[in-house]
Length: 176
Image 1 (cartoon, rainbow, N blue to C red):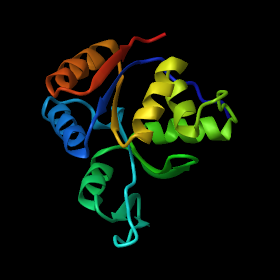
Image 2 (image 1 turned 135 degrees about the horizontal axis):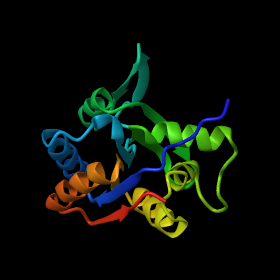
Image 3 (image 1 turned 180 degrees about the vertical axis):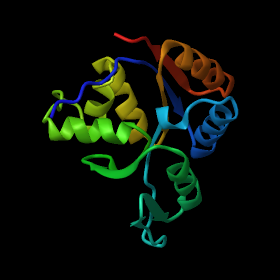
Image 4 (image 1 turned 90 degrees about the vertical axis):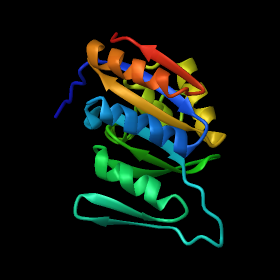
């Protein structure tokens, strides 16, 4: 079975904190952006004192831990959720369609030299390798990525909303 990905545009923003990323996602939701076309990525922070666990209930993943309310809320909104362990980074939480792109990259052994599974998933949607490396570094340093994916019109709207939330950086990638 061959899957063909529609080439869409993307907007990728980096946020310093989960609160800033959450604000951006809520603003996108208020403006009517399709939540099924939105992904969020961040590291899972936990310490010995904070018991952390993940479990599935039907089609939703549940999370126990310091940021449980944050991640749990998004997993109800976004399409898909997963936890990946990345060497050198640790557990990385992913919500949205990026989960499927990462899994497809892993299943197809489409890992691009020097990129993690996360990087390969982001690269597979048309983000240039040098930008992907920047995003992997941002995740490693504890920042959050918000990725809006869709038609040119959808991503133009998302870009405007994202810019209004003052991300560290945001980049627009037109359809290839």
